[in-house]
Image 1: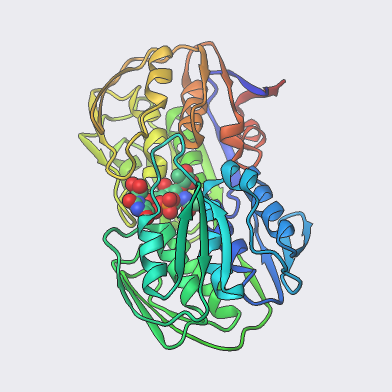
Image 2: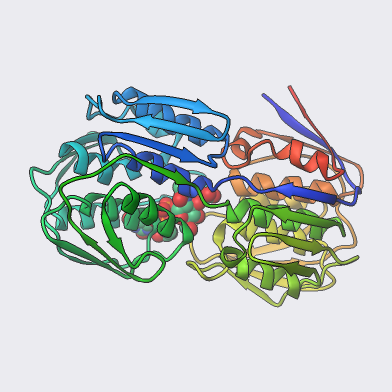
Length: 417
Ligand code: EPZ
């Protein structure tokens, strides 16, 4: 199993290009089954999860051509409705195929995605919304058997602004009879990106980015080209890499509007941040300030996907900080690993109290999930001595050549078998 070996204490300096957004390319690749034609998706990141989504599209009969950061999908010959169970197990976010497949072929069979490292990940809101649109969904022996002769537009009130449920309902409504209104919709930038792709193939989706999204059903759809938005969480992770090493890093190809909550918290931590719309320079402090409270919230609040990375920074803050995780039930698995590196953290339910220490020390640690793994890399960059991180396959799910980018910024990081 591959691992990272990191010699800490190097100040990161230089420029980094931010890759396309994982949480945008996954739903948009799922959506390419809808038009039964061609889609050219640009600025795609090279990630394990993107590879799995391509395998799923191939398994149902789509043709795929990948070249560098471009994926071309021809979904004309889609001829299967069963999503392979092993691939769903590898990537639970394949559940976002439900809405797209129901719109394309009126039928889909997919194994229950189940929970993952960060929580049970229920899909009750997805199923409730799809049933309100007229889908018949049977749950049997861990499988979902979904059929929808004709989907009919309706008004849907989400109990929680679930990103995945919003995406599934948007895609199921594209060719439904009449209009669909989704209230309490997720407002993440990835929702706007999906809306833009859907409208480029000829759908009529309005309100993405607000909590009310309207979809007017259409009959005809076309081929399309679409460029994926930059990954705001990758951008935030690189920003923390600069902050935690007292570095000076310039990020290019970002959407500054999407990372305002991250910029605000890093400024509170003592970073200097200068930016225009698509480029940003972040200078880390000698010692980060403690931050009274960091609370994760749905967008535009502070993202749960940046919680672990922020915790890494605050472990060397000059005081006590509190992080409250309000989105997922079990997203503190990195805490015990950070403590092995000398951090002083106490968790009480979904809150973590972090007492800053002068410095972390290198240790052997394990990545337990994607963002927790990234937080261990960040801590290792600043720790005194050598850190060994195993199970880095978790990290590869969401970061495209992380070690190469950090190396160009001056980090001493090696991927070894
Ligand atoms: C998306 O997950 C992202 N994944 C997650 O990123 C991200 O953390 C999350 O949104 C929140 O921003 C992708 O886009 C592929 P949710 P999703 O539905 O759609 C509860 C990463 O690290 N809920 O908004 O699964 C759920 O349990 C990943 O890149 C229900 O109760 O998130 C959770 O507590 C991790 N019932 C909360 O809502 C449902 O039917 C947020 O879930 C659906 C969700």
